[in-house]
Image (tube, rainbow, N blue to C red; front, side):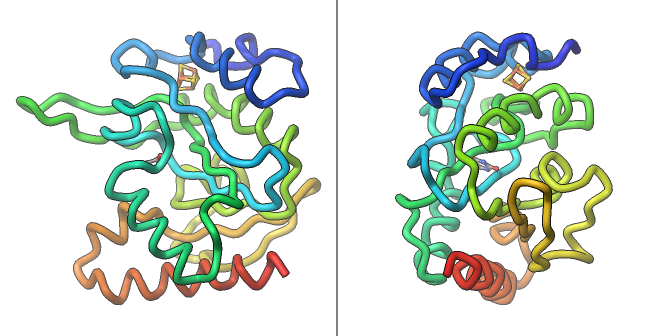
Length: 201
Ligand code: URA
Ligand code: SF4
């Protein structure tokens, strides 16, 4: 994979970036996915929320966090006192990676190669938006944005300083949906988002 960098235009405009992302062939994932799912939200958002990659619904609809994980995220943000419309929502990897099982498309976690290949897009988004705080949902986002060795299990809810912004990682909403004790996992997720709310001032 050559990576996304050669497809990322030198622009100060997020919509130009988004349009260009539709033509990205920086790794193999564009081949089987329906479309690129780019970030969405206010270009001057003080908080950017980064997920892993689009899911089945996001791939079909072309928008981030519109499926079951997105609905859980909406509810949790709301409970933490954060208005979804004020945050910019995006993903570490912009194409859906999956395997087909009959009629179902089963999510596959992106690998290191795809995370690195796609990182030019998230870096370009962050460089234009310049948020105060980046919220990483799950290990893939935290590894793309904070540190390739980041362990969400050990460092969730911890605010870390990067040169251009602060960052905090929590679990992915899909992990909450799959948790054996979903109520407990959801409460812990909302607690982490309340820390985000507190950081927003
Ligand atoms: N999961 C993600 O990480 N991102 C989405 O956009 C949807 C589900
Ligand atoms: Fe480009 Fe990222 Fe899609 Fe790979 S996943 S083709 S790097 S936009």
